[in-house]
Image 1: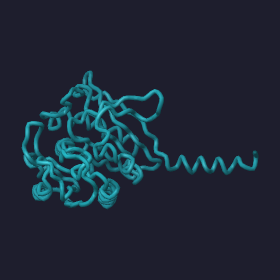
Image 2 (image 1 turned 90 degrees about the vertical axis):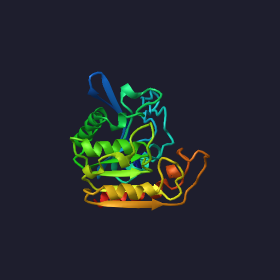
Image 3 (image 1 turned 180 degrees about the vertical axis):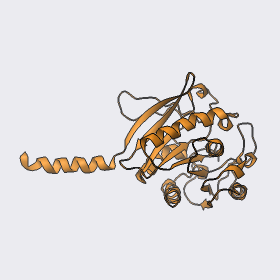
Length: 265
């Protein structure tokens, strides 16, 4: 028994080095309002990334008594939600944000909340919390309707995030919110990556919109447009997650490129 003791300890230490701690964090951001997010913490974070899911954005996060991992009630297949551990493997502290407690209805944050001052206030609390945990840059990463959230916060945040990543960006006007091309993109003053899939057939996120966004980012110090190809298109609805629109099948490639852009800026 004595012979095996130390190899076992070394094995457990080696294993724990690569396992990131995951927890559910709840912040009180406005009177009577809670903002929840999944937090994944590596041992020595290189940067923090806040991930904004698309659609209604109401993930209905909760604690699971039988597991340390939080429970996701909606949006498990969303590109950023399902890729959260890939970002953590790059050494990033990861925050997957839910809609606030007053936006957990059927429509969640659709219809204008993502472009509101209240949303900025809620996420500023998240940014402050992350910076208190690790003194590293904080980046905002949005996908689909989440690009409206991340862009609005990049423009108006009092906490001044360090960078912005937009994937499958909304550029066509509709009733669910504001397209990025109608926002004050000239007020974005941080490095920005705009990523899209060349075969994205969702009518709200045409690939050509990526270049349009880039041309409007006149005061961002670094702007890159990245076109991805390949992967799988499993569903008939081109605006769903398991399609080119959601980078289905090429998640690692996309996350690797995003992570390298963050590390180089």
